[in-house]
Each structure stands twice: as structure tokens, then as C-alpha cells.
Image (cartoon, rainbow, N blue to C red):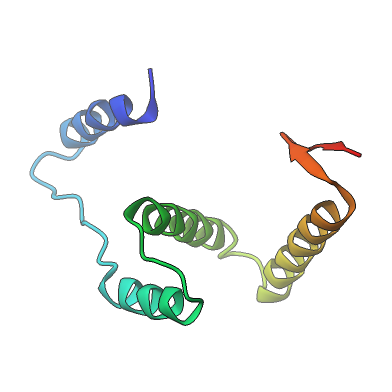
Length: 104
């Protein structure tokens, strides 16, 4: 069963637990405008699957930051710096990366 198939089940459980409560839908209006401007500046095309993937990453990062809300901002920044440095090292030291394994 894929995640797409789980969504209606999850929504049904939530509506049973909280009857009459509407689940808010995210508004990506300003984000999408900025994203499309940035895509144009990079001389790329705003292909729907590309935009969807960026929104998925944005949503994931937003949830990640909500998870760290109790921590001080310095820890969050240090974690992101560590992640970016690690990805940079992997990208520049591996010819091909498949599921975190380097093929040299």
C-alpha cells in the first residue's frame, strides 16, 4: 500500500476523532510565486513534477523545524550546516551515488 492510498484512511480516522473539524489546506501562494521567480532566474522551466518535489521538500523542512521548535535556533542551524557539508562531501568525492553508497 502506498502513501497515496493511506491518505483517505488517515483523513477518515481524523474525522472520526474530531467530528466537524475541517483540516486546513496549506496556502503555497506566496511560496509558489517566489519559487517560479527563482526557477526563471536559474533559466529552468517550471515543470509541475519539479515544483511538486520542491513543495514536498519545503513541507518536510517545515515539519522538521516544527519538530525542533523546543530547541534553540543555533542547534537547528548547526544541524543544517552539518547536513549540507555532508551532502557536499559525498557529491564531490563520489562519481556515482546509489542509496548512500559511493561507487568510486
